[in-house]
Image 1 (cartoon, rainbow, N blue to C red):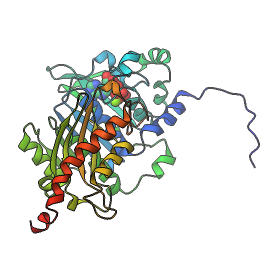
Image 2: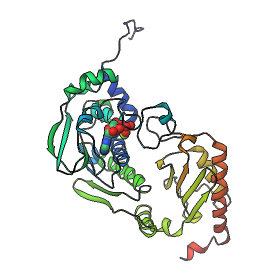
Image 3: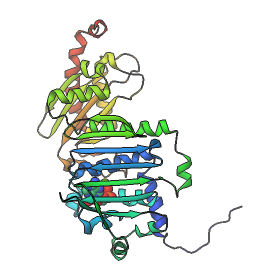
Image 4: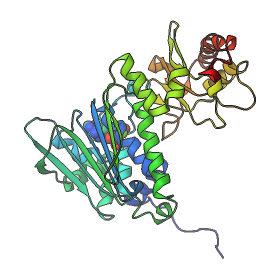
Length: 364
Ligand code: ADP
Ligand code: MG
């Protein structure tokens, strides 16, 4: 039996520290897809193609036509706490990008066979760095000092490449058997990936998305840069019943804006599975906003049904903290009550329109 540990303290080897940290952001293949697509969006891409094999367990490739990475920065990009997105505490307090922690690529590279290639030019020339195995992964070190010392060990090699970036992640968790064991079926892992893509597509209408699974095209969403095209995309992703019966909301106060679609009460569901809330373009789960919406729907919903909605809340980035959790699924509002009251009030006002004609949908 185990006795109390009496060994002396030592710092974890970098590769091990990275694997542990990776566990916070990378739960399954879909988490990798989320991080890589967020990077592509932050790079200003207008077309993002995601190719996965076997639910992402054997291969995930994300290609974008964004700004690309400077050849000298390729090695840095895969180091922990290395980011181009913020450099001061002031910027941390007003995040405008999806990423800012500088951890995703380092984490993913530590638990897969990884390569990153990129080009910032239109001459067809780019560079690639690969981190192919467990031994190499100790170059993704913990401190930036170490990082700079090691970064010349990752040597970018020239390759043919269109402007933009491409990340290839093979054999996710090959060196983390405990995690690999918990992967679900190909179908389940794939459906999580599809959900990630849909969530991104429902807020980034000015970006085209393509999703390919086992060489089959599953999603093909062209840029939706007009009101009609947006509605078409929403219809394609969330279904015609939701899109054609929901009510559009667009309300503004001095420092808050709520826009989007409030689902018809008759379209409420047994599960809260059609609830999309974005805060400053980032999908989140927020108790306070959920509660406000529940209150707004109270008088038009019957029983324990869950309303469907697709909502975009916008506010000054200084008024919301996105650095609550490594996965960034939660936010904290400085003025939580004000947000709650704003959402409740405006949602309720719109929903009152449903109250007068509750049977209308059944006739359609
Ligand atoms: P973060 O997104 O938090 O900055 P990441 O580890 O995801 O951290 O990425 C590290 C850096 O690599 C980014 O800050 C960015 O400069 C660069 N990068 C990653 N992916 C891309 C991409 N698809 N296009 C351009 N630059 C990228
Ligand atoms: Mg990132």
